[in-house]
Every structure is written in structure tokens, then in C-alpha cells.
Image (cartoon, rainbow, N blue to C red; front, side, top):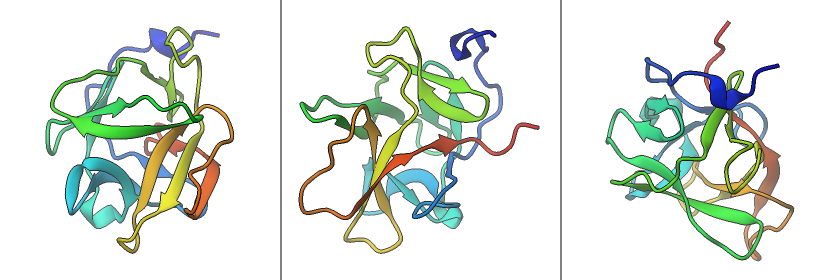
Length: 147
């Protein structure tokens, strides 16, 4: 079976959505009060993304990047430059590619924010969670059905 890294870059921009509670049918976007913070939020304010080895917002032109952290949850950010080229698709699922420094990862961690209806999004490479936050582990994020 071919790996996700062999798939060509998408030519159409797509929303990226959550598929299970607490982010069921919430969508990737910048936090309204700070657009550089990626969150899962309402469909009405969602962004559209071009996905390849990078993930770039069609709305803001910002790139989704993975930041370093000694814990297993890796903060994400939107930036003007693509510092992360590890993204890939496996079917409609957003993953980090097997050949990336992260290996194949498809789990994300979401934590509630002080802005109701929005959840901070982290790449999860283990089972750590931030202390003092209400979080849900082992989340996946997806494109709309590509069937």
C-alpha cells in the first residue's frame, strides 16, 4: 500500500475538522483574539487549507507549524513561514509523515480555552497533558470526506 507521502499536493483548499467529542464538527482556524494560535472552533469561522508537506491557510496565507516541547504534546502555531514540512495525508486524516522527525503521528491533544467554544490543538507524540487544563487526548483531524 502506498504511503501518504506519495500523494500529490491537494489542488483544492479544504476545511480541517474534528470527528469525535469534544471537537466533533469543530474546524481548524486561528483563535479570533490571536490568529497565530491554531484552535478547533465553529464552522462559521473556519479556515480553508492547502495540504501537502506543509499546511497553509487559504484565508490568511499562514502555515501550520509544530513547535518544540520536552513533553509529548507539541504546541502548534500559525506563521508566515513554513518551518514544518512533515505533514501528510492518510486518506482524509492529517498525519505527520513516516519519514519526518516525528514519525507517523496522527494523534492530537485538544484543551479547552478561556474563549468558549474553542480548543487549543497540539500534536501528540505520547500521553502527556498540560497540568491544570481540561484536555482530551487521542483526537484525529480530517478533511471532509473525499469519497
